[in-house]
Length: 496
Figure (tube, rainbow, N blue to C red):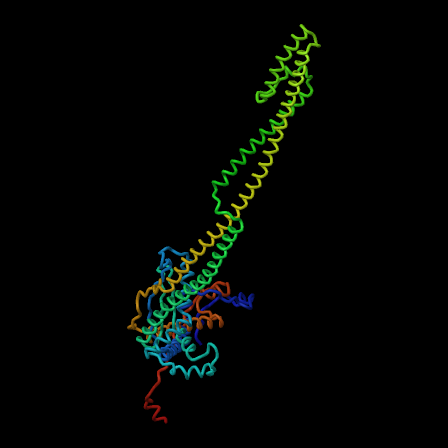
């Protein structure tokens, strides 16, 4: 019986724990020991990985990848004016262009181009189309659309923000086929962008054409309305100077009216004072300078009063000259009062006349201003309609010209060429990767089995598992190999 490789403390120390703790970690030495004792699992895993990878390398078809590079100008300029037009962010714009390049519309154009060149025959896809779709002709399920979808499956579009480029990579079984179809996609994409641009500007031009017709009708209607207003009002275009002159004249008339009202008030006040003054005191009554008749009568009255006093002193009141002078005095006093009354009546008539004239002028000025405002409004309407019509006409002309421009902001930087090497990895590389994967899988399986069985192969593992000390460690004796004897000894032959 071979001695035990490890001698530990008495068994009683182990009875305290009937269930030892499993190891949760493993050192490098233990890992190497496990791989050594479980080499069968690793060898089998290596063999399976190598065979699987070799079979996969033989079955995997060889594919060639060819790419064409297209640059997209993210700064859009107007082809007519040369001004920079607003556009979305570069990343968003490139994403839109990548979606256009990988769309069915571009793929259908590629199908048409390759079919017209004789490079592609749709009948080659008919059997697969019938097998996969049943051959039912519905919208979007015809043979041409299905073939376009098959081409799109092998197309990869990559957008680069920094260079503002699109890479159209196509994968095929032959190098020339990959390059040919990749170039066809690039050409179809550029043609689609040009067609889309021309269609968009043509639609805008058509919309502007309809709007131009409507604006032309609006201009004609505004001009007719202005002409009818001219005929109805019977006036020619009124200038701003005429309205200003009328306003100045009205202001002057208003000032004169205020003066007339003041004169009337003063004249009426003078009349009331004159009527309240005794006739004997009219000779000294204060009169204004403009009352010439009253002033003359007042001067004559003073002379008459003096004459009357002299006659009365000499001849007495019965004298005929005294009576004549007294009558003249009464007439002059009445003349003074009448002059003051006439002056007040004139002031009243003047004020009334100016008020009537002011009312008439105010009405005429209001009518003139109203007519001017209406005329200006109609004229502004005509001018605005004409300006809008001119602007839309110019814009429509620009859109029409841009719809005929055959320049686009997409450029083909590099055409696709047949690749010299396939895109699929080499069979030896696939086999090597399979061997590495098998080795990793085998090592993982070996460690898992080792941890599941809970084997103890070193003293450190024993101390860690049972948390006890080790007294001694005895190496196991090497096992003796039994040699097979091919030839039996002569003794055994004799015994036989």
